[in-house]
Structure formats: C-alpha cells, structure tokens
Image (cartoon, rainbow, N blue to C red; front, side):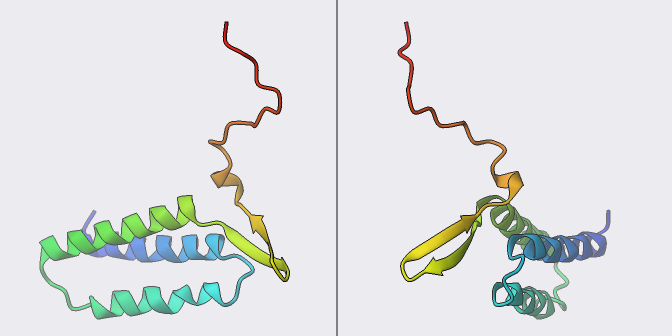
Length: 103
C-alpha cells in the first residue's frame, strides 16, 4: 500500500474512532477540527521517513482513543456516570464478592 493510501486510511480511521468514542457528545466530537488541522499542517510533507513517523503517531493516537477513553456524563453536582463501550469490557475479569482460598 502506498503512503498516500496509508495516510488516507489513517485519516478515515481516526474520524471513525472519534465518532465511536465521543458518541452523543457534541463538544468532544469537535476533535474533528483538530484531526483535520493536523493533517493540513503536514499536507506538504515529502520525506518518506517523516511521513512514516507521522503515520505511526496517528496510529498510536487512534489505539489510545479506542482502548483507553471512557465517556463520563454529569448526573448530579458531584456525580459522573461512566459509559464504557462494549469493546472496552471484553478483557475484564468478573469481580467476586466471596473469594475462595487456593488449596
């Protein structure tokens, strides 16, 4: 895959991830502006090495957004309701109120 195709794929992936992670949060969905600004700033980059470095940074950001960000909704004055996505809960181990002793 050529570098231009990789850049375009990363751009699309970042926007899709942004839409999933910040679903129903208009203020956070404005991350769209930041993503677009970063791609525009580096639009004229010609060094293949620098482009690969930027692609790696963008991929890392997408991974962190997808795996580490949880939405919180203010419900009361000092209360937040966490809204984790289903893909974040797959690796959790169920909590046990009555632990058993190893024999």
